Length: 270
Length: 267
Image (cartoon, rainbow over all chains, first blue to last red; front, side, top):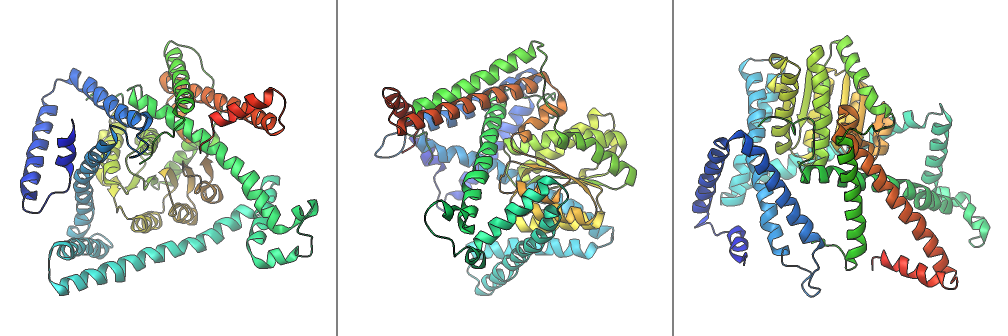
């Protein structure tokens, strides 16, 4: 029944893509005009109905019994088109994000504020990545593809890795502060962390290697103590937190789904 | 794709029951029933941190994490709206770097509204909410740079954080900022506990907006949440008992125990 919708959202060949893009832009403009001209008292009910139907779709898709052969129910095929609508909204807001970058850093450059050259480097890098990225995807120019490769593989990935590596140093300084013995809790934390770290390294295991591997005394081997801490104490605490988060997530989802949410933007006149 | 597993009814019943309890508590709270919620030190520290920034004349930083637009981000924005109302009152400068463009557009609206609600729309600076990058470590370096350059006095980190959490928290610590953090990512909670002054753990994150606003609907939902947790705890206790009698093959009870355990077992 909804097969045309699935076909409509399927990838399109380049020859017809511009028509689809133009159609989508026109449709979006019409929707925006319609929403702007909608009477104020009708806007909130409309949002409530759309939110409820969208939530109902995902809940029904999850709970409706599935055909074991295909691992699908009658709604599963429409999950991709539904998630694409979300991606489309994200795509549109990305323009606003880029405008924010241009506004903040463009002003820094025009007014020659301190560090204006950093803003210039940022905007130049952004424009270069866009241009060479497009050429890499759609063009054939070999030099441009090489430049993109240098920018992406040679620079961006390495800078990402550099930032990631910094975490190792931050872990040392943060754990130094956390493990300082100032209270009973900090002492327990320090001892526990010490035992887990010992259990992770061969030298730690070697310390209690002389203990038998079987019988109750084997529980005192460092690797077994570590395993007990991780699988019993730590896992229990993490599961308790996860259950609390799950129920909390259910509560806030219900409030939003049934339009019961209050505060911040939910009570705003629209 | 993910679906409810074959044994759909037990899960559906527990979930619907929890949902009904939450809605029941919301309705009773809306009818004026007085509800008690315990003190959450991390949320009480928000005012202290804003006060410190006011005294020092330095900016307040709010980071909504790197996650997309979801209930987690909505909750973070709800907390930031409260912070923005306080900063609007005291005239603090705020900085809010954002990694997701959808969150950015909503955040700008929320903060603008907060300033308007406090009667100081002229104090709102659109440049205070900035989209930096949607790449994890590009965003992390941008925020770390902002913290160092602006020498922030207070830092609030609420939302979805991953490996970059420690970069933010440690950089904030380096400039001597008072830091309050909360995330639903259990892997990042230890980092925040180690590096921040106050950390909101687990479902306290979802309690934040109710705690701050004291709105009856939200408070009702919060109490309903606790009833939901109580229901799950009862299931745990009954399940543990059932598994024990099933393992011990207790006459009659053993069969019932096996049936109960099987009801909730995912094969």
